[in-house]
Image 1 (cartoon, rainbow, N blue to C red):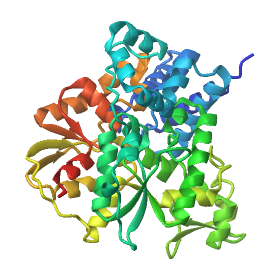
Image 2 (image 1 turned 180 degrees about the vertical axis):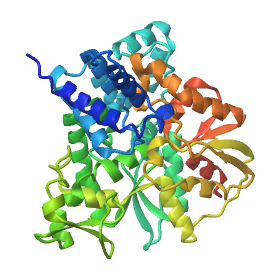
Image 3 (image 1 turned 180 degrees about the horizontal axis):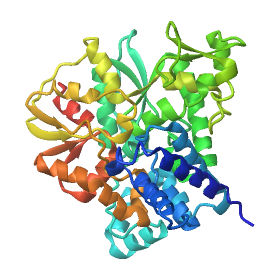
Length: 464
């Protein structure tokens, strides 16, 4: 008899959220999961019966780990339910194939012309989409003739970074989508970082080029996510120890390294010992979402009360907590990093105007980093660029990474993104600016408005 653990976990989520209801109207327009949860909860409360096993599974699949809901415990329980489903029922081939974004990127990058020809042919395109469980109407991106890895290999010596001895040092982590599908974003990131005087080492190759781990984590494939993260953690920690920061142009990668990787690490015995805690006290850095009496920049908690609750027991708890903390504390969003450098007076000379009317949309995983909108201030330095920010909103594009490609998620993803797209169209922009390349894929599917990462605009305006 199959275990009913995943159903129990997701029923617990329904009961917890249904009894709280703080999010009932808070993020309903930016979420598919919570409206369905409250529908099931209301039906039961009104005598319509418990949610079926199929309904619970479908509910679980609707969570895309955007981070918008305010309860980390609820998010972790949803992820635990996804993992329990994957362990008990297995993952279909289509999901296993789609979640391995790095492998798909390498394969397409090795044969870009063949890939484009196959996707342009209706017969082979239909076959590929059916095999991968994709909706037949989902638009596929063109594979670039030269991906980021090849650009790095062929870059002339005269263009390589010649940083000063005292320059900042950064590992640039492009993420799979920029590396393989939109290399113009990764190229611009490297060139702008260098223009700001940064010594840049790009994270490509083995093991430096591994996926961050978010796609398999989102699908419940915890073993694959853990394998990817353990490989990344080792080389990242070594570079951080050597004085490098980790800079991400992908908000999802940045969110993963800053928040998900560090969850629970400050509660570990290794960190508590390093921080100077004792048998009676736990010491947690301020700003980590924990409130209590302060001692300098630390929150001080009674170990007897909070010790059994605050523990490092998540998926990544088997990895070195001090390395997880070091990487998380030295991980930066690209805009955040450049804004800091600009604040130090390092903004390079601009030579070209960019006469363009654009709207700027900050994606979910950037908003959840709680760093504001650093690229907005940087874009203000671009001559003749007019930017209307679509901030202060819970709107979502609906793509949710690889989820938007799934056949059953295709129409819900478009429905979720429709209000945002309508708001964008109302401004009649000449371009959409956003850091998230999943959003870029969704916007390209929904409209023909040109889309750029803000770093591409900064690259346009720099002097050679």
